Image (cartoon, rainbow, N blue to C red; front, side, top):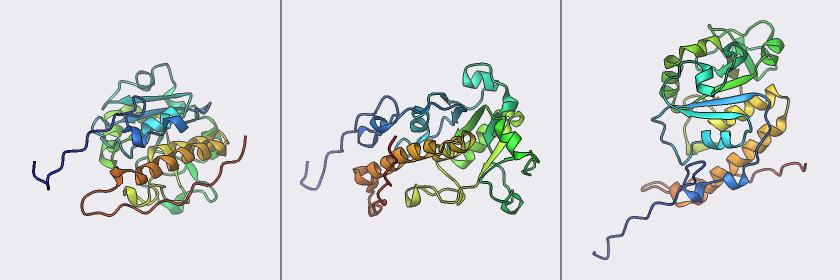
Length: 239
C-alpha cells in the first residue's frame, strides 16, 4: 500500500431497532407516547435512506403504531394487523390542493376526492381512529397510493405547517410544506388528540437525530462542506 492510499472505513454497526448506524441512533432518547389515534406507516421497499429517514424512529415513539414494508396489501386490516374500519381512518393526502381554498385558521384539514375541504371539519376530524402515512420519495409514495386502492375509502388529510421541515438543507423536499414522516405524524397526532406535547417530544428526538448526523462523519462528503450546526433545541417543559 502506498502512502497516499487509505483503507476503507469499516461500516458502523447498526441499531437493531431503527437500523441506523450506531453513531446516528437516537433510540436511547425515545420516550414511548401512549397515543389514542393509531398510526400505520407503509414504506416503499426501495426507500433506502437509513441515515436521515425517520419512519422507524416515529413508530418507535408510539405505543399504537405499525410499520410495514412492501408495495401492496389487500386491505387496511391486512396492513395494520387487525380489523379496522377504513372509513374511520385517514391517509395523508398526496394530491394538489389550492391553499386559498383551505378554511381560515386551520392547519389540519379533511378534504374530499377532489381536494376540497369537507363541510363539517370538526366532525370529520373527531371521527378519525387511525392515520396512514406513506414513507419514501414523492414518486414512491404515489406508487403506494395507487397500488393500494383501499386507501381511497379513507379520509384524506391535508397538513398546512407554518414552518418548513427541520431537515433544512440536509434534505430537499419536493414542496415547501413537505415534512419528514416523523414530523407529519407528530403534527397530525398532536392536533387530532389535542396534545401538543406529542409534537414537542417527537420533534425533540428529531432534532437530536439531525444534530448527531451533523456532528458525524456521515455529514461530510467529498467536495462538500459539512452543513452548519442547527440552533440548539428549546428546553422542554417539565412533567
